[in-house]
Length: 102
Image (cartoon, rainbow, N blue to C red; front, side):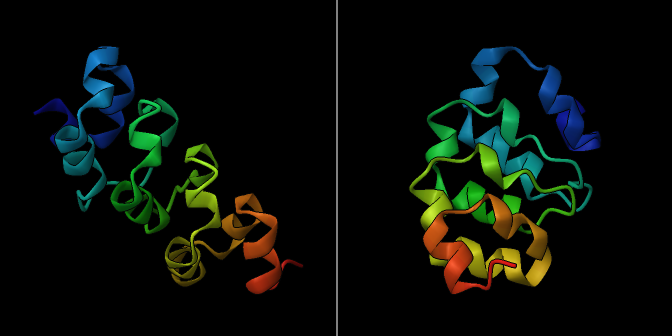
């Protein structure tokens, strides 16, 4: 409930909850989600494309904490270009070249 009221509360939950995809999805899909929790996700969840796409749509996006594989994903890059173009800097060399690294 605390994470639903204020998504940033996820950063304070017990580490065992930071591996709970349902909780992470609930937080990241909230209308109030405007500060990234990606740093606090478990290593397993940092490999989850669905969560990375939600992150790409967040105003306070920290895409760089997701897996190298996801940092080379065109779907995530496209979502970033629509919402957080400056975050392309944290993507792979290939993505930066494809989407116009400046």
